[in-house]
Image (cartoon, rainbow, N blue to C red):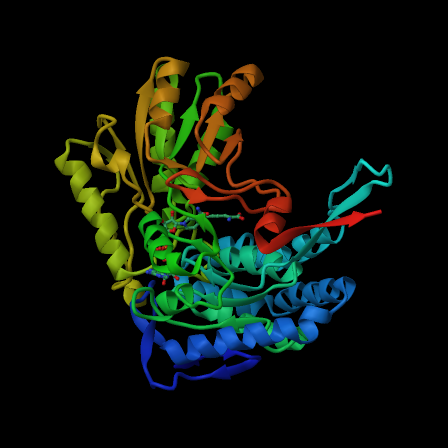
Length: 486
Ligand code: NAD
Ligand code: 6OD
């Protein structure tokens, strides 16, 4: 059984208190590791190490050298690709076909892309006329924000953690990461890669544990943290804002969603089905950008539902390392209970269950895992619980619509505003509809197609701020103006 420790000041250390918790494989419900739980002492040590790193070699390092090290981190992830893949799949149960295409390659890319991007970003300057005729020169300079707390979720553990650590380090900060208690492995493994790449001690630190009264809360309330970047549930974001308010610091939040997919009758049906299949069922529906509300224009409604049902029934649930597996389990028994409670609620509220709605019979070692059936509902009003609340499971409600105005109103009738997908071959309609949707990202005829130079984040209850491209630079640096009287 693997022992998973904190990574503080370049070393793997256990908890002083001796407190640990179980690392469970959700596909089998078996314990596969034991994880040390950080107390205030470990969090303090990690913050001190980060602060010292900023005062030491890391803080003084020439930019080119820093960027070269980040390239080595990316190369180090790729060199140990299979270890990262296995670690991620054991923690989450996700199929290797998915993690080898998305999670691990993006984990490496997040270091290279941001290192390359930030080398070449200009800053502004202004000449000012003064009464003496000699003038003044203003120029701005960016400096690292300082010690950054990174709190990450379990659905895309390496991808979402490095999406913040990559730009944070490229900007010259030091970080303390608190990965989800469900998925500690890849973040811990990254500590080994950081050491091998020559990242100075204290620049990258990892503390394990839970949220309230554990590592998460100790980190976000620590007075010497300069910024908090968080991905997770909206209500956790609210708790972090409250708990961290005393020490005034910037926050960047990527939160929940209840994303619409809008399928017009003039879509390319093949593309729309393929994309909606991925957006509903990829990662067992545990993608914040995923579609849980599908709106289909009435003339193609029956055909679309029939084909989506066929696609869902063709998904193969199984072990992560089976090449035939296309869908894994949910992350935990607790999350399975939550998703199943929504399946029951949909039936109680009168949904037509097109497919799924229950728990599949899995064989052998997988019998006790957190498995649920891919599920499609129709026939509910827009006020139904499963149409309103984020479920974060492999399910969607499909609703027919009759006009552009109606579907835009329904799509925006949510407290969230993270993502949307529009399927149409009419480009005027595509631009017109995209402009009216309240979402941080609108995909037209695609889903989860990412360009890391673009702004990413959520409107309304889906987040605070934007990261990606120069927007990450805005969060991870302090901008200061120097005014020189000539
Ligand atoms: P979560 O909010 O339960 O946990 C996220 C992290 O916060 C974990 O590391 C957890 O330990 C920590 N945490 C919990 N309570 C805390 C507290 N009081 N103080 C400090 N830290 C605390 O989220 P999750 O269940 O891991 O992830 C699923 C949720 O994340 C979904 O709502 C999903 O939509 C959202 N999500 C959003 C995005 C995005 O980009 N907007 C991306 C992925 C996931
Ligand atoms: O692709 C990304 O950068 C990103 N932040 C994706 C978020 C996925 C949510 O589950």
